[in-house]
Length: 207
Image (cartoon, rainbow, N blue to C red; front, side, top):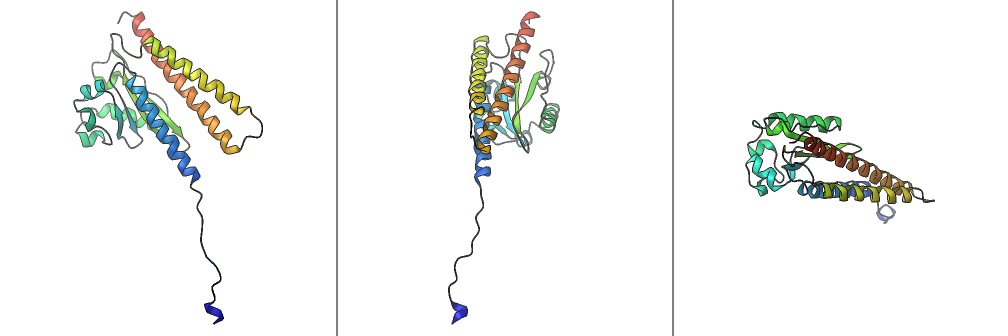
């Protein structure tokens, strides 16, 4: 009969390219944060926006008193560290809320005061996580040659990104990604400058 006649398919399509792009950028941010803390001589770790560890270096695991493998995907509460390091976690939450870094002091008597905390992966919907590192009184921070190499990498990323940004007939999505790369390189440059000034300040004071 006419009412039983096949008249076609009904369907809908959802564009998930932006979701995939965001997941890719977040994954790359996690890789960058993880790689960066391994270059630091003192204790360092990275967390996501929910307060779960995504990476910690060997010095950090020794300071916090847990095996390195025990941290991944866990919060301080799950690890039984929420009481001892409550003040440090409060600073992390503030950095997540504001997107501003929290500078530690090498003179602090407690580790939570010696940690500097910076945001990583600043996205449209907020900060993806925090990166924390402790600068020691003796020879803390990033070695000068490593800082020099990192500055060179930042300069190269920025130079080529600005070159690409000036190319004609770029799609808006491409322009947006290039702008994000430039923004990320500026934030990384600021982080390297912070590490440099703190380490140089410690040396000048004979620490």
